[in-house]
Image 1 (spheres, rainbow, N blue to C red):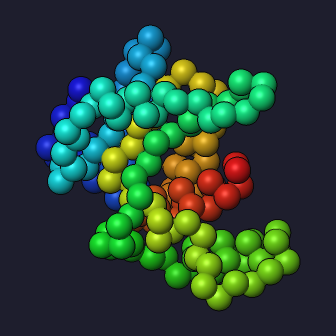
Image 2: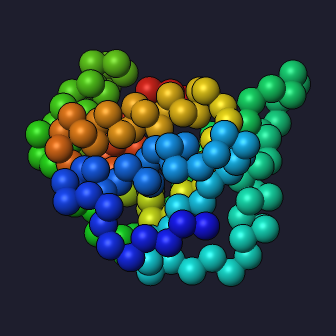
Length: 155
């Protein structure tokens, strides 16, 4: 458990480093890490870790939950970068050949105030790196649009 009461960095994007790159803060033997913002209280950490460890069903028995992320109940404020949103929308239209005026990725469904990470899997690390790269590249104050976009690419 790492408690941080002050930002580790002054750069807004680097403040997200412990959240999006937790492997750098733990020994290689640590399998899972939980990130929560200060206003989040976890009542059942064992249940949360158990839920995050479930494997999706398929015939081959392969695959795993890469990351457990919260669902926005509609009350979370989502800071937006208009250029980032427009670019992601154009990429979506180009890749699907469809414009849905009501679709804005998964942005409205994601609440990244708590995350459960699997640390030992390379594809999961790659996913987190892609999200962090998007945050840094857009100089975004939020990771929610990046999570939405990268989830769509990795799906």
